[in-house]
Length: 195
Image (cartoon, rainbow, N blue to C red):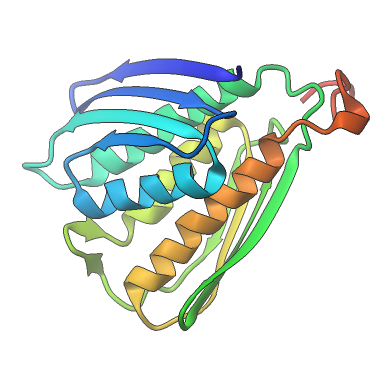
Protein backbone atom coordinates (compact mmCIF):
# COMPACT_ATOMS: atom_id res chain seq x y z
CA UNK A 1 0.00 0.00 0.00
CA UNK A 2 1.36 3.39 -1.03
CA UNK A 3 0.34 5.51 1.92
CA UNK A 4 1.57 8.50 3.90
CA UNK A 5 0.58 10.49 6.95
CA UNK A 6 1.78 14.05 7.44
CA UNK A 7 1.16 16.55 10.22
CA UNK A 8 2.04 20.21 9.71
CA UNK A 9 1.46 22.80 12.42
CA UNK A 10 2.14 26.53 12.19
CA UNK A 11 0.83 29.60 14.00
CA UNK A 12 -1.79 29.86 11.24
CA UNK A 13 -2.91 26.26 10.66
CA UNK A 14 -2.85 22.82 12.24
CA UNK A 15 -3.17 20.13 9.58
CA UNK A 16 -3.12 16.35 9.39
CA UNK A 17 -3.28 14.54 6.06
CA UNK A 18 -3.46 10.82 5.36
CA UNK A 19 -3.35 9.55 1.78
CA UNK A 20 -3.66 6.09 0.24
CA UNK A 21 -2.87 6.21 -3.47
CA UNK A 22 -4.32 2.71 -3.91
CA UNK A 23 -7.64 3.52 -2.30
CA UNK A 24 -11.20 3.58 -3.58
CA UNK A 25 -11.93 7.31 -3.45
CA UNK A 26 -13.08 7.56 0.17
CA UNK A 27 -12.66 10.93 1.88
CA UNK A 28 -12.94 12.34 5.38
CA UNK A 29 -12.57 16.09 5.08
CA UNK A 30 -12.78 18.98 7.50
CA UNK A 31 -11.20 22.30 6.54
CA UNK A 32 -13.95 24.62 7.73
CA UNK A 33 -14.61 25.76 4.14
CA UNK A 34 -17.51 23.78 2.71
CA UNK A 35 -16.79 24.33 -0.98
CA UNK A 36 -13.10 23.51 -0.49
CA UNK A 37 -14.07 20.22 1.17
CA UNK A 38 -16.28 19.55 -1.86
CA UNK A 39 -13.30 20.13 -4.18
CA UNK A 40 -10.98 17.90 -2.13
CA UNK A 41 -13.66 15.21 -2.34
CA UNK A 42 -13.43 15.48 -6.14
CA UNK A 43 -9.68 14.76 -5.98
CA UNK A 44 -10.28 11.67 -3.84
CA UNK A 45 -13.23 10.35 -5.84
CA UNK A 46 -11.82 10.89 -9.30
CA UNK A 47 -8.24 10.16 -8.29
CA UNK A 48 -9.33 6.88 -6.65
CA UNK A 49 -7.26 7.75 -3.60
CA UNK A 50 -8.37 7.76 0.01
CA UNK A 51 -7.91 11.11 1.73
CA UNK A 52 -8.30 12.06 5.37
CA UNK A 53 -7.68 15.79 5.80
CA UNK A 54 -8.30 17.77 8.95
CA UNK A 55 -7.39 21.44 9.22
CA UNK A 56 -7.91 23.98 11.95
CA UNK A 57 -7.02 27.31 10.38
CA UNK A 58 -7.33 31.01 11.08
CA UNK A 59 -10.62 31.35 9.22
CA UNK A 60 -11.47 34.42 11.31
CA UNK A 61 -8.96 36.18 9.02
CA UNK A 62 -9.85 34.45 5.74
CA UNK A 63 -9.35 31.13 3.97
CA UNK A 64 -5.94 31.83 2.45
CA UNK A 65 -3.72 30.06 4.98
CA UNK A 66 -6.07 27.09 5.24
CA UNK A 67 -6.27 26.45 1.49
CA UNK A 68 -2.59 27.06 0.78
CA UNK A 69 -1.37 24.97 3.70
CA UNK A 70 -3.65 22.05 2.85
CA UNK A 71 -2.10 22.11 -0.64
CA UNK A 72 1.38 22.11 0.88
CA UNK A 73 0.59 19.25 3.25
CA UNK A 74 -1.15 17.15 0.60
CA UNK A 75 1.88 17.67 -1.67
CA UNK A 76 4.17 16.43 1.12
CA UNK A 77 1.99 13.35 1.63
CA UNK A 78 1.85 12.46 -2.07
CA UNK A 79 5.63 12.87 -2.36
CA UNK A 80 6.10 10.44 0.54
CA UNK A 81 3.57 7.97 -0.84
CA UNK A 82 5.22 7.71 -4.29
CA UNK A 83 8.70 7.31 -2.78
CA UNK A 84 11.50 7.14 -5.38
CA UNK A 85 8.88 6.92 -8.18
CA UNK A 86 10.30 3.67 -9.54
CA UNK A 87 7.80 1.96 -11.81
CA UNK A 88 5.38 4.89 -11.96
CA UNK A 89 3.71 6.16 -15.09
CA UNK A 90 5.07 9.62 -14.06
CA UNK A 91 2.90 11.64 -16.46
CA UNK A 92 -0.84 12.14 -16.20
CA UNK A 93 -3.42 14.18 -18.06
CA UNK A 94 -7.17 14.63 -18.11
CA UNK A 95 -9.88 16.68 -19.76
CA UNK A 96 -13.07 17.00 -17.71
CA UNK A 97 -16.33 18.73 -18.72
CA UNK A 98 -19.19 19.89 -16.54
CA UNK A 99 -22.04 21.32 -18.57
CA UNK A 100 -20.58 24.39 -20.33
CA UNK A 101 -17.19 24.22 -18.58
CA UNK A 102 -14.16 22.25 -19.76
CA UNK A 103 -10.74 22.01 -18.11
CA UNK A 104 -7.46 20.26 -18.81
CA UNK A 105 -4.81 19.26 -16.25
CA UNK A 106 -1.42 17.76 -17.09
CA UNK A 107 0.97 16.53 -14.38
CA UNK A 108 4.60 15.43 -14.47
CA UNK A 109 6.05 13.97 -11.26
CA UNK A 110 9.31 15.44 -12.48
CA UNK A 111 11.09 16.39 -9.26
CA UNK A 112 10.94 19.98 -10.55
CA UNK A 113 8.12 21.99 -8.98
CA UNK A 114 6.20 24.35 -11.21
CA UNK A 115 2.63 25.51 -11.65
CA UNK A 116 1.35 26.98 -14.90
CA UNK A 117 -2.31 27.89 -14.44
CA UNK A 118 -4.51 29.73 -16.92
CA UNK A 119 -7.96 30.11 -15.38
CA UNK A 120 -10.15 33.20 -15.58
CA UNK A 121 -12.85 32.61 -13.00
CA UNK A 122 -16.09 34.41 -13.77
CA UNK A 123 -16.73 35.09 -10.08
CA UNK A 124 -14.49 36.11 -7.18
CA UNK A 125 -16.05 33.65 -4.77
CA UNK A 126 -18.00 30.41 -4.62
CA UNK A 127 -19.74 30.28 -1.27
CA UNK A 128 -17.03 31.06 1.29
CA UNK A 129 -14.27 30.02 -1.14
CA UNK A 130 -12.22 32.81 -2.72
CA UNK A 131 -11.51 31.61 -6.27
CA UNK A 132 -8.00 33.15 -6.14
CA UNK A 133 -7.16 30.46 -3.59
CA UNK A 134 -7.37 27.68 -6.19
CA UNK A 135 -4.01 28.91 -7.47
CA UNK A 136 -2.56 28.93 -3.94
CA UNK A 137 -3.71 25.34 -3.33
CA UNK A 138 -2.15 24.00 -6.52
CA UNK A 139 1.01 26.09 -6.04
CA UNK A 140 1.47 24.61 -2.58
CA UNK A 141 0.87 21.11 -3.90
CA UNK A 142 3.27 21.46 -6.84
CA UNK A 143 6.05 22.88 -4.66
CA UNK A 144 5.99 20.08 -2.10
CA UNK A 145 5.04 17.17 -4.36
CA UNK A 146 7.92 18.28 -6.63
CA UNK A 147 5.58 18.16 -9.61
CA UNK A 148 5.12 20.20 -12.75
CA UNK A 149 1.41 21.00 -13.10
CA UNK A 150 -0.36 22.68 -16.02
CA UNK A 151 -3.98 23.71 -15.45
CA UNK A 152 -6.14 25.30 -18.13
CA UNK A 153 -9.84 26.13 -18.02
CA UNK A 154 -10.68 26.00 -21.71
CA UNK A 155 -14.24 27.27 -21.44
CA UNK A 156 -16.97 27.97 -18.92
CA UNK A 157 -19.05 30.81 -17.52
CA UNK A 158 -20.20 29.33 -14.20
CA UNK A 159 -17.40 29.63 -11.61
CA UNK A 160 -18.58 26.56 -9.68
CA UNK A 161 -18.40 24.50 -12.86
CA UNK A 162 -15.02 25.96 -13.79
CA UNK A 163 -13.53 25.10 -10.41
CA UNK A 164 -15.09 21.65 -10.22
CA UNK A 165 -13.76 20.63 -13.64
CA UNK A 166 -10.28 21.72 -12.55
CA UNK A 167 -10.29 19.66 -9.36
CA UNK A 168 -11.83 16.62 -11.06
CA UNK A 169 -9.28 16.77 -13.87
CA UNK A 170 -6.49 17.19 -11.32
CA UNK A 171 -7.63 14.06 -9.47
CA UNK A 172 -7.76 12.01 -12.67
CA UNK A 173 -4.38 13.30 -13.91
CA UNK A 174 -2.77 12.58 -10.54
CA UNK A 175 -4.27 9.09 -10.58
CA UNK A 176 -2.73 8.44 -13.99
CA UNK A 177 0.69 9.84 -13.02
CA UNK A 178 0.88 7.79 -9.81
CA UNK A 179 -0.34 4.53 -11.38
CA UNK A 180 2.33 1.82 -11.57
CA UNK A 181 3.40 0.95 -15.12
CA UNK A 182 3.78 -2.87 -15.29
CA UNK A 183 6.12 -2.54 -18.28
CA UNK A 184 8.67 -0.56 -16.25
CA UNK A 185 8.38 -2.18 -12.83
CA UNK A 186 11.21 -1.05 -10.58
CA UNK A 187 12.58 1.37 -13.18
CA UNK A 188 12.85 5.11 -12.57
CA UNK A 189 10.94 6.76 -15.45
CA UNK A 190 13.76 9.09 -16.46
CA UNK A 191 16.93 8.83 -18.55
CA UNK A 192 18.70 10.55 -15.62
CA UNK A 193 17.99 7.55 -13.40
CA UNK A 194 16.40 9.66 -10.66
CA UNK A 195 13.51 12.06 -10.21
